[in-house]
Length: 378
Length: 193
Image 1 (cartoon, chains in turn blue, brown):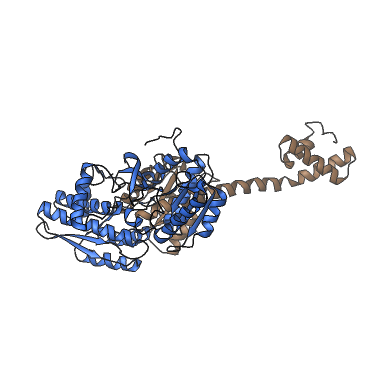
Image 2: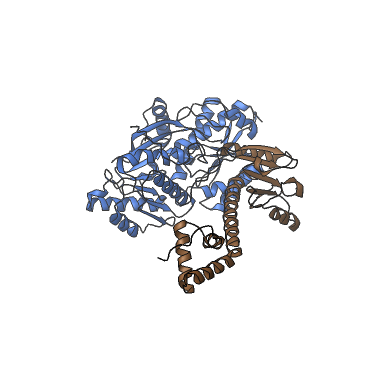
């Protein structure tokens, strides 16, 4: 096989509530393919498929890829799409490379996880927020598994920290009527807001919180921040200018990361996509996923998934996310934690960081209790 | 609020021939912090495990120890067959969840959570039932004690009953237990108060 073109499936939707993320993920994957072609001289053939946010189309796309000897699929953003594709990938002995933050409670042999689970985003974010703002948050979320499970976990974390959840509300995907939620927040006066809304709902909510803060300084970001675990650079342009300034977001990558690797990467990305393009964590993670996938296939000398997995484990790979290790038990990457504060020019100022945290998808090692002494990193 | 289940440190016994299903089970158990042993011979006692998984396609009665009272442990059936007889066997043995074969990684954690939770619920119900059965059995004693108080103290039935109830509450005993004491004459009768 090594003389043939190396095929990598790229399965992202450029439309729907996650459209902006899908476009970034696809572009990041594309750039990784191009960089690897230049670097290795290998023929690498990306196989693109856009499911247009339809679950059935994700299946069709994955099926087409797997049937045409494309055993590695980088893709899916929502858990629903990932869960849809996994049985097919298992059946055809392929490997899915998933690179979005998600709610955890999964560890499939046929998936390599480069997106963080809650012990890599939500828990460290709470460990930062609670000592500074208090343990009386308000929870909002999209009405599906991401929102439900993140908020369930948040409730448990808050209970274990001796705090109290002041409210919990959900909106259907794409719903932008946030007035009732805002009124309730204004009345209950939480110490911070955990935002697990998605796409347009999230943008509308941030804009309305900005209004609320203008009427009452208690709700300005410095007093009652809105923190998200999946808001990205590519989305900030879709929010009314300045509306989200000062709000917080957890991620394993931000465009503003001040490392040699990132500066070099941004120079390459600027040549390909223009100087104005901000690199989001999905862009960087899709790039890292494709990059690792190709490196592992070349190292294994085969694209056979078992061989590729063996090649990945027990090694440290250079990556855009920093030195990258994949745990052979969970198939999850250890990931750094960064907390970003949205700035006026639609980027994130990194205000706290932690070195790579091993993934604990089932929260078995430490459970959900906050450490007795909260570790403050800033 | 539902708590995040945590199986760290648990011991699971898998009663199944070794195959790709048991490989997958052992892998997932490893990352859930569960120690697993696999065997294909009868398990003599429930005490060896916190959790038992059994091949319900091939399993026979003596593969599992007898379940007396609340001695059993959470049991998960590993089932490929749709034969009603095999499903009935799994239920008769006390299985409270099924993991279909071929085993999908995503089926394991939910089945464990459900099996453990239903097992605990069954134990609570069984304990309660036992307690109530005992009380029903001893109910005639209460009547006899009320009659004795009426005769000795000259009370009407309602007051005699109320006295027995108040004294049982003070002593943190059931009415049936206190009635037995009153009838046995081991202690002086409570004063009217």
